[in-house]
Image (tube, rainbow, N blue to C red; front, top):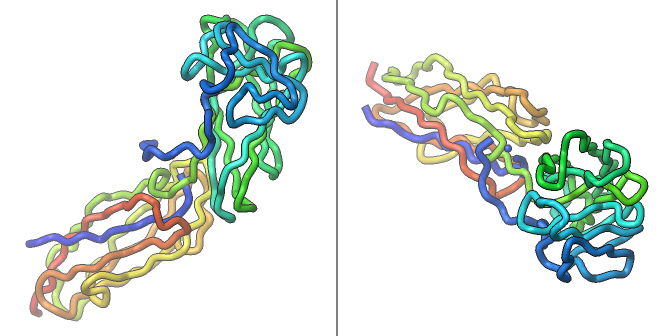
Length: 293
């Protein structure tokens, strides 16, 4: 018996995880490019010492040797002489979801133990916290944080704002922004369905494909279509995925049915239409053969 492939192609903008490597949409996300900071230098509004980032409020400390960065050798204290804010703009596609990943710690030299940092892209801002208790310049305890947003314009401005008063603020490093793709966030199981031999002009028992959102953002699924060499030999039923805004950790299912009218191997493709034409391809192998009654 020969096999054939049913390919599920996710064209969404959503992402988590074994994830495909994607280009970072922000420049100088690890803050390695800029004036030599030594241990640290303080930069305020109008200063251009941090490449590709604009200081839009207050001041920040551009840190070199004061503590161990999470990525590379430089990072930021988001409170310089007081709370500061930085911004960078980048190209986005309206309606697509993106995720911002960044590493956060705190200046262990003083101030309150709880450090606060706000992230925004023009939507409702989100606050993040870090507790420096037990940490030191050699053991910063960097934590990865995630912020998800939906683009409302062709250009999005990402802003980080310190929420900590005084000169000992939240530490920031390793900022990454990427389009969220369902191919990297969507689990499909099983990876193979075996219909065995099915008599002509009869229906096989339905077999279920389960999709699970493994990411941290809602995935907007469009619909499944049947295409390929012999799409009329197959059917889809009990579809709980199409048109669904699939929340994180939630599954949805669709049944495949083999209904051969011809003898021999029949081949078709199921495509899950979403938003992003460049998303990774997910594949499910199906095995079936039409036989004479």
